[in-house]
Every structure is written in structure tokens, then in C-alpha cells.
Length: 152
Image (cartoon, rainbow, N blue to C red; front, side, top):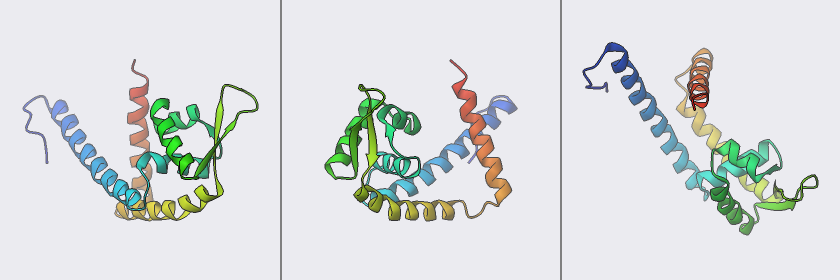
């Protein structure tokens, strides 16, 4: 669906592109959220477990930067993951003020099949795109995001 805005051609094109981009993002986001929630995790919990599984132990600040969550919101997520035995907190040896979050063995057992299901859903969502289209979409999306980070 295109915009009904009656402005300049460039304005209409940008609005139309935003509408399409936003709807695609919302559609895929809803599919992915349902898939993760059906397996007993929130999106934020999944994000923490996935990062720890693929990157390794990190500080709360590092995790919050990767997930684009505030550290205060992330602390609650981590508290719940600790209660479930999926992650553990350990003091940082180099900085006593910092806590490092580690994936527990149980956490690794939990995230493995959930991540596999997540990846299968993503492969399905992007199945109509060839490799070049995926690279182009990735590059354009990165450029859009980076462009916004330079504006202050």
C-alpha cells in the first residue's frame, strides 16, 4: 500500500518505502516473537541467551549495547534468567565494579533447540530472496541504521 500523501515525489517515495519497510519488519518480528514465546522465553531473554551462546560471557553493559536495551531493563531480564538457572553472574576479575554474565549448562541446553527453531523461521521468512538480494538488503539496512547513529 502506498502513501496517500500529496507531496513531492521524493517525499512520497520515502514515505512509501518506510511503510513497506515497517510492515515487513513488523510482520517478521511478530513471527519471530511468537516462535520464541511459544518456547517459553521472552524476546529479551532469548537475546541474552543467544548472545552468550554465540559470543561468550559478557558484562551487563556489553549485552545491553548489543540488544539495545537499557541496563536497568536488562538487569530484570538477567534476574529472571538467574532464577531459572539459565545464566550465572560472576565478578569480573579485572574490574570489581563489573559483573560478567555466563551461560549455564542448562542455559546452553535450552537455547540450542530454540535458536535452531528461530533460524528455521528466519530461513523461511527470507526464502524468496537469493544470496545477492539478502546481501543488498543487509547492506541497505546497515547503511540506514548507521546513518541515523551519526546524527546527533
